[in-house]
Amino acid sequence: MKKISLTLTTAALTLAAGTVSANCDPGEVVAKFSHVTGGTTHPKVVAANSLAERVNKEMNGKLCIEVFPNSTLFGDSKELEALLLGDVQLLAPSLSKFGSYSEKYGVFDLPFIFKDMDAAIRFTQSQAGKGLLNEMKDSVGFVGLGYWMSGMKYFSAKKPLIVPSDAEGMKFRVQTSDVAKKMISAMGASPQAMSFSEVYGALQTGVVDGQENTWSNIYTKKFYEVQDSVTETNHQLLAYLFMTSSEFLEGLDDDVRAQFVQIADEVTQAANLSVKAAEAANRENILKAGGKINVLTPAQREEWVSTMKPVWSEFERDIGKQLIESAAKA
Image (cartoon, helix red, strand yellow):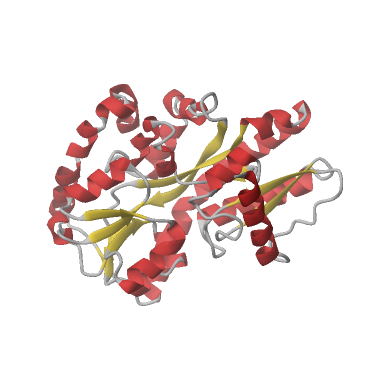
């Protein structure tokens, strides 16, 4: 397994040569940061680049970060394995990807549990939210450094979705989240899990009929080009777990680790404050590019809420009633 992973890494490095190198100096600890997002305006891209710029300037000679965007190093189906093997040191996967490690992360996928991003941020700063950062430390060796918000999610499809029943019989791409799959099933549709990098092609060829995502993902990946329209459901949060491995983090000298963690926390806070503006801008970019957005009436939105709310009770025992209540109260 190690040999295969190293071969994949070498191929990706060759492909990305000249575009992602940070020109790290000899003797510096090098941390490879792999993510799947492209473009220049996506919140994850902005946060990852900001982190690298600050670390490479302020920790020059001690720690150096190389950023590999747009799945040039690993796709989202391989990156967690790569972190375990030490082929990368920093990731920011969607929180929906951790169901096989801990069912508690499913709280972030529950439909309509957060009114908006401000409520989600309040939850991540609560005792319950902070506790989830180390949920996988003992069992797997994953350590959360912070939550990177990307925005609320919206549905797009090959035809307008005004009420949930409009999706009946269609196929929707989802992440590998049991909660998300149940949510799609509640609409009378079929969930299809697939990698983020495959979504545009799947929409274009009709392998799937729709998907759910933030304004930034819909715009930067041009999903609006191969969909009839996007419906402003605001139904779910998309956030990433900015993370590393305990092996890497604990392997740093005490002073290096303390400085890195402080920078990581400051970058996280700044990035989350800027997300709402970025999301609003990319919503307008979709319209300017010819995309269509369906705005729901209060009654129509309430129909979405009532259709999906039963999903909460299906996962109450797995996620934990107290954790769900903490998130809802945020």
